[in-house]
Amino acid sequence: METLQTSGQPSSQQLSDRIAIVTGASRGIGRAVALALAGSGAKVVVNYASSSNAADQVVGAIIDAGGEALALQADVSQAEQVDALVKGTLEKFGRIDVLVNNAGITRDNLLLRMKPSDWQAVIDLNLTGVFLCIKAVSKLMLKQKSGRIINIASVSGQMGNSGQANYSAAKAGVIALTKTVAKEFASRGITVNAVAPGFI
Image 1: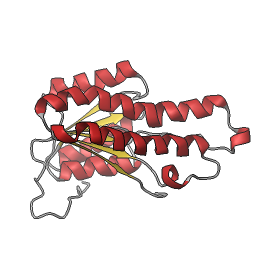
Image 2: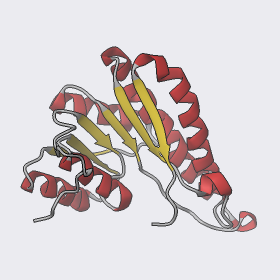
Image 3: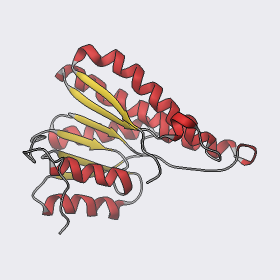
């Protein structure tokens, strides 16, 4: 059985009864975030695009440790699928307190070799997907007068990275989007932050 990570705070249930959506949560950073949130008491929606087996394993680890979780498929670059993700979350848990925008892809190549389709695919998922997810939960959070939105950006969005024009541009957009939405929602009880990891 997998041990869930906690934040190191005195109580591992500091997020008790909070509902969290983590996009791209079947592996990598998203998986670790989902397990950490569950370890702090949150009920977690494990979003995945295609890897249902991996998502089910994350859900299983959370349930085995005494938590509650649900796997929901959605391509977050598609507005109708994002709406279905939010609807499924509300049908199961009744509210949304935390959104972690983690879903992303890479299509690396030097600029002169990069196909327009590879540029667009990364922008659509890594940037537009964040916009669509924030927009989908924002009315709910505004009505609740509370909410936490965390966007996974990248140091590539701050510094650029050779061979990643599409990814760097998308992550720079995520950082700017985060700053803008944080200002728009600051007076409404909703915080919006970005985390910019290096290579993991």
